[in-house]
Length: 116
Length: 453
View (cartoon, helix red, strand yellow):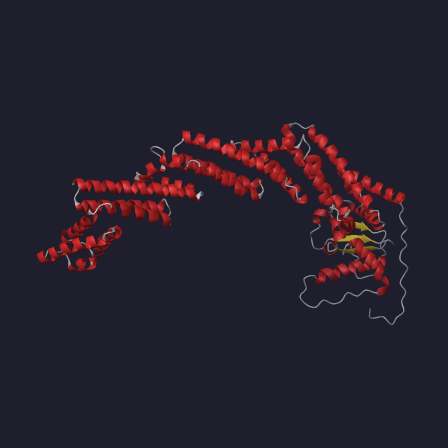
């Protein structure tokens, strides 16, 4: 579906292991699609960060359900987080982040929800 | 944006049902239960996303006030049961319980704040309410800390803990309790701008500190020599500074040390100088006690005004000894050369005192110089004595001396010469002696003569 879908087997995360560079978290969209992304990328979004570093279920399982966010929107959000981490503190000209106008509104709602 | 030629349709916005008040209350009630779970340390079973979404929906559908007020009263009621619990705790474990309750409350507030992040960002900002975390701390202050059966007891216990440390009973446990409780006060104060730390602790602490050191300094004085007192005082100051760094707010350190210095040093400066046999003035008389002098100086330097008293003592001592020399000279008990040697020896001795005990302080040097000028110029004899001394030196005293020894001796003479006010008197005498020497051909060396000139 997207570049961010990794097929490798992920070992269970315990929260104390969360700092190792190759640990991953799983996000599940409204339609049930599972997206894996690196923990450090996920932490770039404020709400995601609070969820993953808090003391609730999500932090323990390194897994977050988003029953109100569609797959195509969630995918775009994850793409954005990669973009953000890649280009933060960049000293050269940053390429534009392309957004198709059809999804702009929904994306805006999701961005507001997720504070990123 | 680059595909503007292509026709596109905007997908219909997902239809959010209007949330009426019944639904809102239902949503709130599930959040309310979740907060209860948080308070019971059962949060790990809850889904952050779900709670966050509930809060988000409430705010989105204009039920922000319901949410905010609901949260506020939930926190308050939890705090009320907390304070009831604290009131029933005995003094022996109160500090510890307080610290635990505080720590729990902070953790709870962090979790509650996290799930209500959306409300903080939007509703709170636009309605200018206090953000959730600060609200929680403010409620803690009002409900728990300022309870009449909590605050007075805790403050008393904190002061007692410090008293027992001062009496020598240190434990790691006490220290960490002090630190925990005091940082609680600091955080409460900064959350809503109330001055709890200053009002409920610092003021009283500074007051009791002053009392303590007032009494302790009197007791030290009556049981110790000046030097022992100095050692004890330095010890105390060190101890207080350490405690301030470890447990108290950084802003407390400076007024604290200043109070202690006033009580220990400033109040008793005179006594420490004049103490019989062991005060500063007495120690000046003993050549071997320069270390003790320096210790006293180091202590007094903390209160700059008191060092002046030390300099006075030095000045007095030098003048007294100097006048004694002059007196001996008058009586004819000593010859002129002895007088000059006496002056030189005092100078060397007290020069060392200034350099070592006063750490080479410029003002002390100045006072030393003034003291010499004082007793040397009180009497016209000084000039003539010096001239005689030089005469003797050039006639015979320098026989067989090396160049450097000659230079050193002459240097000494110059030193005394500088103190003389009536330099022309000396000149007159010197000319007389010089003439006699040249006529009699009695000089030891021409070079020495020339050097002198």
